[in-house]
Picture 1: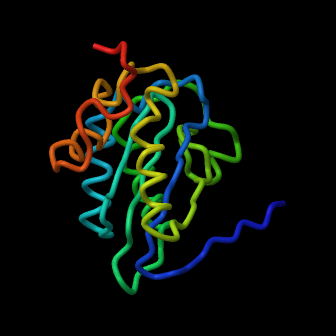
Picture 2: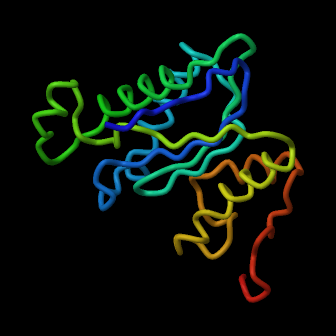
Amino acid sequence: MPNYRRLWVPGRTCFFTVNLERRRDRILTANIDALRTAFRETRAALPFDLVAIVVLPNHFHCIWTLPEGDADNARRWARLKATFSRRVPHEGEPSPSQIARGERGIWQRRFWERSLLDEHDLRTHVEYIHYNPVKHGLAVRAIDWPYSSFHRWVGSGLYPADWAASPSSP
């Protein structure tokens, strides 16, 4: 059995990837309001600053910063996943181990986490997040994907609207 180890550093900024159990499912964008509600309710109960996010049909990436003195990312993810799961219809039967854990079989159990070390590391990961829909062929330009914090960053003047657009894009 793997020995998962996570850093417990209060107030740190992390990049995350969270996947659906079945990668062919497309429930995240189809239920974007439920996901937004899950984030809002989780942040109200267990605060964090959401720096950047992109939601694709079957996974999402985000960066958040924990409050000073708090190092518990795992509790936030457990709450967020559970809140979303209660709000969406889901087809398929959970496995016996999922039933034993009280899971519906929507999410992969783990999440991928990386501590961001400095401003350059942060900027690189923010750009990765915002370019992800283009990389996956879901949009021609970052601005075209509606489920991304890219729009907020453009509105704040941190990116031009045509960032990462090819010269031939409209």
